Amino acid sequence: MFVGQYSHNIDSKGRMAIPAKFRHELKKAVVTKGLDNCLFLYTKKEWDKIAEDIATRTFTKLNNRSLARQMLAGAMEVETDKQGRIIIPEYQRKFAGLNKNVIVAGLYNRLEIWDEEKWEKNIKYTESNANDIAEALENVSEK
Image (cartoon, rainbow, N blue to C red; front, side, top):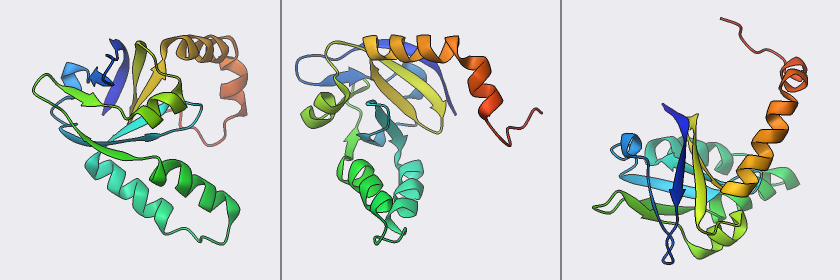
């Protein structure tokens, strides 16, 4: 389970350190173009489930084709190096607008990688609208 928020840097070669507590699970992983102009980072096992679901949807529907292009064609398998870093491909850095300062956010089954400024804007919006967002959700368990 991935949770928490971590500040990291990307170097000029596109290398970014994975938070230390997640490195063991992410030795082999997949990074892909996500939603909201961020990147999604999955364990290989979790990615296989998601990719299977996307790939088996009927290709006759535009939204299915679009999602497959976004997530499957936008994906790259990555491995952590001895320093616990992955290389984020240039096309993904460009898509997410990643420069130097990034936020790595744990969202249970994935990590999201955000440009720091975009993350701050997103969080500010979410926090100021949290009550309305929660009210609009359906079928959320209150266990």
